[in-house]
Figure 1 (cartoon, rainbow, N blue to C red):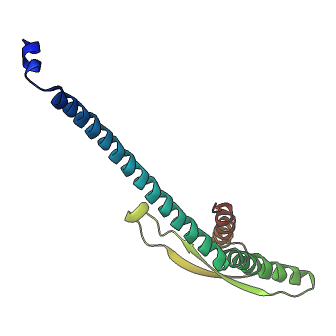
Figure 2 (tube, rainbow, N blue to C red):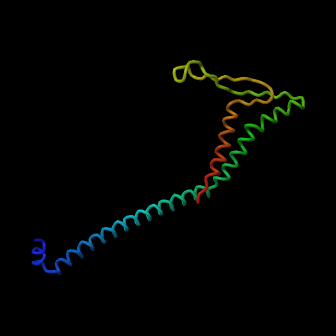
Figure 3 (cartoon, helix red, strand yellow):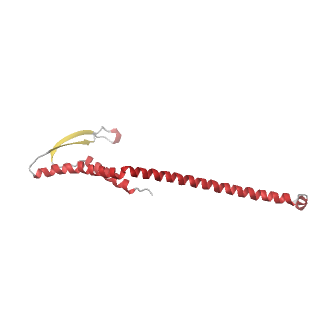
Length: 150
């Protein structure tokens, strides 16, 4: 029965339909490849823009900004109090006033607000603020220096 069906169709039509199917499949594959190529080019362009932005941010003086911040923090957080402590060996009694907070009691957000106190003392004082600032500056300096653009 099938042979009777094909006997009435010219071979050019059968060849044409086969060529049409192969051509359509080839065109679909080419479009898929073109879409993948476009996506890769778009990703490469975005990566290049991100790299250029990172290089521009690095070139704006970020390295020197980090260095100056680290030096200033080290001087004001540890240098000046150290000078005050060394002044005691010279017979001077410099007065240091510092502020600190103390939890008002309670638990988490249900307690009282933190209360701020001031204290006057002589000598070298390291408060939690000093340690937090020193840690923040150190992590900012080294953390930003670790990240490099390609």
